[in-house]
Each structure stands twice: as C-alpha cells, then as structure tokens.
Length: 310
Ligand code: HEC
Ligand code: HEC
Ligand code: HEC
Ligand code: HEC
Ligand code: HEC
Ligand code: HEC
Image (cartoon, rainbow, N blue to C red):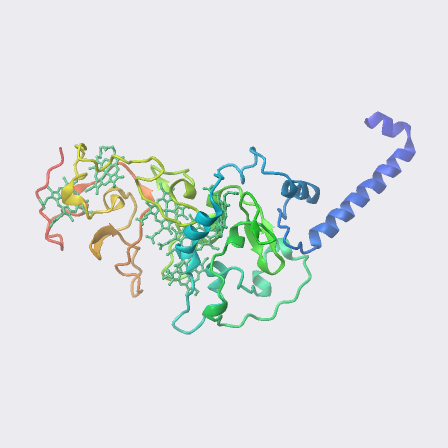
C-alpha cells in the first residue's frame, strides 16, 4: 500500500483531499447540535450514526444487560419510583442548581458548567432563574437515560449530557449511568454510594431495578434463604426480624440505630448538620457481623450484653 502511494504521486494528493474532506465533515458533524439523535460525542460520527440505526450489538457494553420488558410495566415501575417524584426546594426557595440531578431536562447550566465536550457548541445561556415551579419540573424522566425517537425509547441506555440540544454521551455500564447523579460531592445531606466489601464490582442494576429503583438482599436470586427457619446462623432469627441485613453486615464507618421501627445503618453525622439519625443503607457489606456493634456494655437501647456467638 505504502509503496503504491510512492509510485503514483497523484494518489497522494487525492488521499490528502479525501482525508481533509473526512476531517471537515467530522468537524461539522461534531459541532452540530443533533436533533433527537443522541449518540456518543466521543466516537467518530460515522460510527455513531450506524450504531443508532442498527439493533444493539450484543458485544456493545451499553446494550449487554438489557432485558426485554413490557413498556406499560416499565412506565408504571418508573412512575412509582423516587425518580418520578424528585421535586425539591431549599429552605431559601432555590432549586435551579438541584435540577442538575433532580430534573436534568429543566437544568440550565451556567457557562462554567457546560461540559467540556460542548465548548465548540455555539449557544448562549442566560443565567438560570433560581426557582423552578413544581408544575414544570420534569423529574428523572425516560429521556435522561434513553435516547428517544418520536417519543419512543431507543434500545440500550445513554446519558443525556446536554439536555438543551439533546446531546447524549455513551456510558460503559449501568453503574456509570447511575453515578452521573449518585456521586454527590459537596451537597449537604447527600451521600455518594460506593459499592465495597463483598459486593465490590457488582453493577447497581444487579441489585436495583433500573425503573422502580427497588433492591432487597433477597432479590435477583441472591440470599433468598438467608432468614429461612432452617438457618442456624446466629442473628438470622426471629429476635432480629427488625434488623436490616446491613446493620449487622456493614463493614464501614457507619453507625447503627433504631429509626421508625427498623434497625439500620445511619448517615455519617457531620457536627451541627441535620443528618443526625438519618437512615442510610450501607453498600459496604461483609460476612463478619460482630454482635458487640449493638450488644455492647451500657448500650442505649437496653439490649442484653451477654450474648454469645457460637
Ligand atoms: C439524573 C440523575 C439520576 C440518575 C441518572 C439516577 N438517579 Fe437515582 N435518584 C436521583 C435523585 C435526584 C433521587 C432522589 C429523588 C427524590 O426522592 O427526590 C434518586 C433516588 C434513587 C433511589 C432512592 C434513594 C432513597 O433514598 O431511597 C435509588 C435506590 C436510586 N435513585 C437508584 C438509582 C439507580 C440504580 C440508578 C441507575 C440505574 C439511578 N438511580 C440513576 C437521581 C438519579
Ligand atoms: C449531583 C446530583 C445532585 C444534586 C446537584 C442535588 N441532589 Fe438531591 N439527591 C441526589 C440523589 C442521587 C438523591 C437520592 C440519594 C440520596 O438520598 O442521597 C438525592 C436526594 C435528595 C433528597 C432526599 C429525597 C427527597 O426528595 O426527600 C433531598 C431533600 C434532596 N436531594 C435535595 C436536594 C436539593 C435541595 C438540591 C439543590 C440544592 C439537591 N438535592 C441537589 C442528587 C443530587
Ligand atoms: C435512571 C435511568 C433510567 C430511567 C429514568 C429510565 N430508564 Fe429504562 N433503562 C435504564 C437502564 C439502566 C436499563 C437497562 C436495565 C438493566 O440493565 O438492568 C433500562 C432498560 C429499559 C428498557 C428495556 C431495554 C431496552 O433497551 O429495550 C426499556 C424498554 C426502557 N428502559 C424504557 C424506559 C422508559 C419508557 C422509561 C420512562 C418511563 C425509562 N426507561 C426510564 C435506565 C433508565
Ligand atoms: C449488592 C446489591 C446492591 C448493589 C450492587 C447496589 N445496591 Fe443500592 N441498595 C441495595 C439495597 C439492598 C438497598 C436497601 C434497599 C431498602 O432496604 O429499601 C440499597 C439502597 C440504595 C439507596 C438508598 C440509600 C439510602 O438508604 O438512602 C441508594 C440511593 C442506592 N442503593 C443506590 C445504589 C447505586 C447508585 C448503586 C451502584 C453504584 C447501588 N445502589 C448498588 C443493594 C445494592
Ligand atoms: C443480627 C445480625 C444479622 C442479621 C440481621 C443478618 N445477619 Fe447474616 N450473618 C450474621 C452472622 C453473625 C453470620 C455468620 C458470620 C460468619 O460466619 O462469620 C451471618 C452470615 C451470613 C451469610 C453467610 C452464609 C450464612 O448463612 O451463614 C449470608 C449470605 C448472610 N449472613 C446474609 C444475610 C442477609 C441477606 C441478611 C438479611 C436478610 C442477614 N444476613 C441478616 C448476622 C446477621
Ligand atoms: C444491629 C444491631 C444488632 C446486632 C449487630 C445484633 N443484635 Fe441481637 N438484638 C438486636 C435487637 C434489636 C434485638 C431485639 C431486642 C428486643 O426484642 O427487645 C436483639 C435480640 C437478641 C437476642 C434475644 C434477646 C436478648 O437481648 O437476649 C439475642 C440472644 C441476640 N440478640 C443475640 C445476638 C447475637 C448472637 C448477635 C451477633 C451474631 C447479635 N445479637 C447481633 C440487635 C442486634
């Protein structure tokens, strides 16, 4: 191939012209806001176009763990979830910055907050109004996680990175999608979920339904028999029916407490903050479950101290 180019100087010019054309097409496409098309901003446009038209490739990580499901069930599951009921307002009557995660389609980024991938996009943004009415709040709707075509969700999932121009970014896994919002830094009373301990490496959606967001320790075929009458494991008994699995099995720094009838792990208390005694389910779960976490000397709940572990 290289030899032939050397033999025919003209072909070199044509290759140069051809490459220049491809490059400019690439540039133009990359800078266009795409209407309802989505696709990956980091991929070559030609590739992104075909991957949209074709059915999901089984080798494509973003299509891999997608089960076929009934649309009405999905709609109902989502409708019952906190993602469909995410309206918030601060004590000061502000919520526009909250919309970034609580209603991404309502969110108007400031010039500083526009993702780097869009710095070549030419659109002006006015400073966002501080308050968005509940009646126009869009919650965490389908299109935040799915590219849409004529109000129908496209197969697979993606992240609506720049809502005003319907620009999507590819995500490598469901966890990467969930983490777009569930990694929360510097926002009071919010905690980043980090899966550690025995479950390290598991996807959020191996335990959580992506639409109703529910998870229990005994779903997905896991730990179904943990509390069965036949269990001889200490703690897996009637005495502890109000104790959440993680209250015994957490490995983290979280403390435990009795909140509204259930024993659970608690959010780390920041001095002077309002998060005191806020339940927060640990995602750092291990086999070891020390009885002294609750049955310690002079514990405030009056639990017996002389429990013995076989
Ligand atoms: C666009 C941002 C966003 C994405 C993406 C997202 N979430 Fe959420 N999620 C939220 C917000 C905001 C809430 C809180 C809603 C409320 O109650 O106000 C929430 C609530 C939840 C809750 C309930 C929390 C509680 O305190 O009970 C679970 C569980 C959850 N999400 C799981 C997931 C999973 C799993 C994924 C990935 C499939 C995901 N979320 C993706 C923003 C997001
Ligand atoms: C980076 C994403 C992000 C931002 C920004 C954000 N939140 Fe959240 N918020 C979440 C997620 C995820 C949850 C659910 C998990 C949890 O409870 O920690 C949540 C939960 C909540 C909850 C508890 C659920 C409920 O509805 O009762 C409140 C209250 C809340 N957020 C208020 C706010 C307010 C007010 C702001 C703006 C000042 C804000 N959040 C900004 C991601 C965010
Ligand atoms: C927070 C992100 C999120 C939201 C919001 C969301 N989905 Fe999904 N959806 C997912 C993920 C992730 C999967 C893949 C499920 C898995 O791997 O367990 C999925 C799977 C699906 C599937 C099946 C797989 C496919 O590609 O055909 C359909 C259909 C679907 N969603 C429709 C919807 C509809 C309709 C809504 C709104 C009512 C919605 N989704 C809202 C994240 C979301
Ligand atoms: C090994 C299983 C498992 C994995 C993996 C997992 N979760 Fe959970 N998660 C649970 C269980 C169980 C609960 C408690 C549900 C309950 O008791 O209502 C929970 C609770 C939550 C809550 C509510 C926390 C609270 O108490 O306020 C959020 C938010 C959440 N998970 C998000 C995520 C996200 C995001 C991921 C991925 C980064 C993830 N989870 C991965 C099992 C899991
Ligand atoms: C009162 C504390 C307590 C509670 C609540 C509890 N466990 Fe355990 N669990 C233990 C102890 C102690 C062991 C044995 C640990 C060891 O072998 O070092 C154990 C062992 C296990 C094991 C290993 C296999 C076995 O059965 O011995 C699994 C899996 C498990 N627990 C899951 C769960 C699940 C799921 C829940 C909630 C449905 C739960 N546990 C609730 C204390 C508890
Ligand atoms: C997360 C807190 C917690 C942990 C950890 C815990 N327990 Fe308990 N335990 C309780 C609660 C709550 C009760 C119920 C007290 C009641 O009914 O008044 C209880 C009751 C008991 C009882 C019967 C009543 C009594 O006080 O004698 C025994 C025995 C017991 N636990 C043994 C254990 C053993 C053994 C372990 C370790 C494998 C353990 N517990 C770990 C919270 C805990």
